[in-house]
Image (cartoon, rainbow, N blue to C red; front, side, top):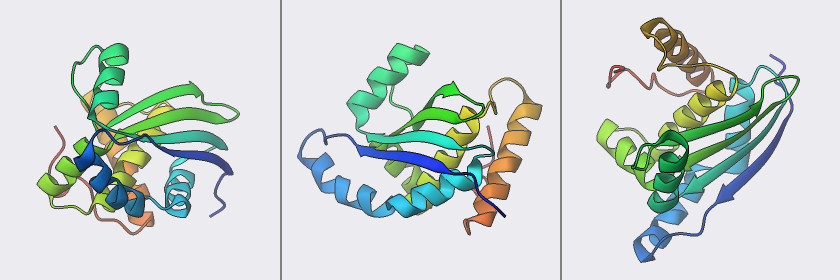
Length: 162
């Protein structure tokens, strides 16, 4: 399978406080550049220019509040700028939220990052899950397909959608 070309900017926001600094090493270890590129290239159907930014709770909450009017940190936000001929997007992932979710769901941090990076990349290409049950089922099926190709377990197996 020929994968589309990708230009990737992988950013780690400065940690917010001492506990965040200690946790940063685990997040960096879970996200080697070559793996993030691989995950994105499997999720993209066209060439991509993608920024993946890992942030703390404060930045995640501010972005979610300012752009989605939800005053809490969330796991992933997708800011898509173009879908053709090049997919251009920023994916913002909130490290503390991902870590809490991975622990609660019994997943490795890396597996959860892979899932949410694929999820964000699909959003950048127009996939939706909040518009209808059919859209959610289609998007989740595509996520499962991609993650299986990447060697990860079904992200929804232990925790059904909804």
